[in-house]
Image (cartoon, rainbow, N blue to C red):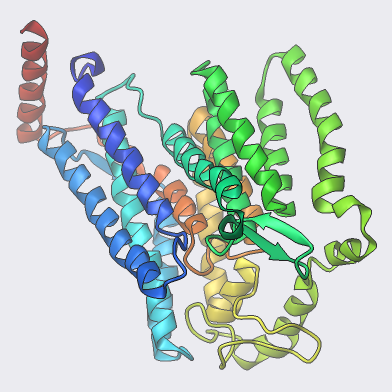
Length: 433
């Protein structure tokens, strides 16, 4: 039993608008918009709580419209193992080397987890009862990324001191400033590419989408993020391989063959600077750091780790031959250090069942979710990642998890059928008047 979308356009447009606003604000709350720590904390804690409540309110409004909450769980093990990871993180407060830090990080991860549940559940109800509607998760994500990127692109020209971050002794300026780590901003751009590219599949606002992608790629180049550039190129290659139109596939592949060497030379190899080449080979010092973590840090707490988002007994881990680090710059190494081999096992199976759920999804959903996974997984190998300190990569991964976790329930209760029939009748009455 379903409703005709054309009879409920005002309602659907309103839901679409609120979904975009909620997602834009939620992702925006991960940025450090002010150097004032009180303002930053207000945005990150009060702001996110407000958006969380907003997602619950929107879900209730959809339900109040007469839409039954008729969904059953699907790919339960993906959510179950993620819940197990969170429960182990909560239990780790008992042995954490800094309960305050562990508790705050755990709370923020749970916060985005609950937001993702209600956000995706709302879209699932719309999908089920308004077949043929125009609300799409990839458009919500893609437009969210685009408008956030626009802020940085405008900012880099209007206020470069704020929106640029100087690295390598002031020799290199990278887009991001104190507001966001350039590599994380690059990952955000990659997610935008992965989502907006779907508009070409459906010939939806092709010219506008092309403009959006140009702005995003311009910002991606300005971040100087090597890993994000590789992720964006992989996304394009992945989608090109899905195309059945051989001429278009050949044209794009030729274009990538021309652009890729230039992009790699300028962004990854930094014009062949020998010192930068050494930096690339050591992954900017990450490889020695990871080696020291495994050889010196892990043997101290191998089974259950140092506590949620903790990598040592002190605030920083430092070996004799490495820089001091507060986080591992690798999400899987982060799990290993803060929750030990028990936590890493939970994460391994969680990702395994998530991937299985994605591969069993419909073609469009499968392509979309794999596209999103590419940049956030690559980012997970070098930065905070999907199991690291609270960041929007975690939010995107949680959206992926819940996107495969709901299935339409075949049978409705009597009261649900009556409510749906009443909504059908009201829809026809509005059109008639």
